[in-house]
Length: 426
Image 1: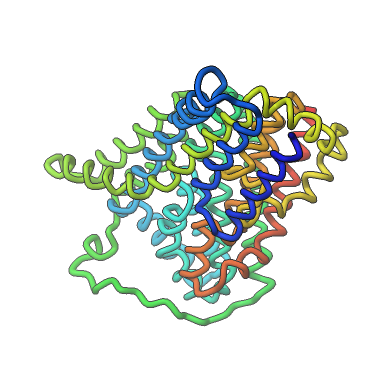
Image 2: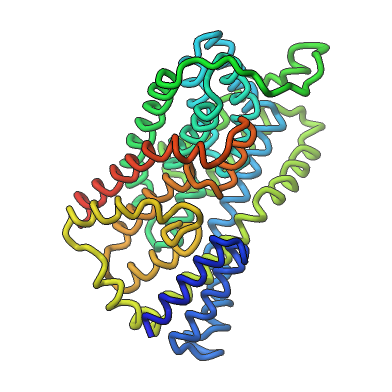
């Protein structure tokens, strides 16, 4: 039966790759099929309706709330001009020095990446940052890649991601935080190296192709939307609370929302801005929240006793236990997290992670190392991810061009994560 379940999983991957079914729908159908194949009854204990659907759907509720708060904070960074001001200040400081401008935009992208992910993060840093980089001669592919590499450098500190891995892998937040701190130097080094190498290797290209739709200002504040200097600290507020004072994730993010509001908004306008940005956040967060509902359902299915019993021998037979082989094999498998492949943690990869833990093949913290390392690759180079598509199209290139240019760097980040995982947890 284990072979049949694997074949069904392969069919699910094919449906997602060919876009026959949206990822969320495919994962739910896959979960129900796995549950029936594992011999789960329709109702009762370890059943399709009560366990997989009823208990699985809200299993990642904390992650969904964190995603909503991150989207809310991202909306505030946009509406209050905080993100735009950060990018403009960097561009003004960099002047006509391409490397300085690119490194500055990279830094802002990293800050934004700690707050929210996906296309909203790319837009916050890229709407101003990409045209600014192209204007000083940075090639278009490098400009798009700089935004993505910056977001990925901030990803180890993205609090909703901490919550996701904590809930999905049943690990305490301090454990997730500890590994993310080890992964961060690899992500940051790769991002800086990308800028330094690609801006020099490709040379300067003066090919301005993006037009600004902004009207001329009546005043600097009205056109540029400059936020007060103290409001620019907003992205670091949740990090300081979560890292420095070990405040829980959701309160830390709420504190960031309140800080952004209080430092940029007049008291009589606060109510309207709060509601407007919150409703806007629901629009942004709706798609990932649906995906996390589907992932919770899939995790519940692969953890059923019948599924674990069927899959354990097969998965154990192909899972390396030697640390060197562990690093080698999973490094070679990096491309399988692209194009919504089977190792994409926001797809079937979540189910595979659940099997690895439920079957006792690897400790949960080692699976955390695998999943977070693959996530660094997916977040930058996957041509189907929303942030990659947006950044590439806004810069005037294809997502595939961005993938080819960035993949060697994030592949090295994944390798670093695997090495740390093998040396520490195996």
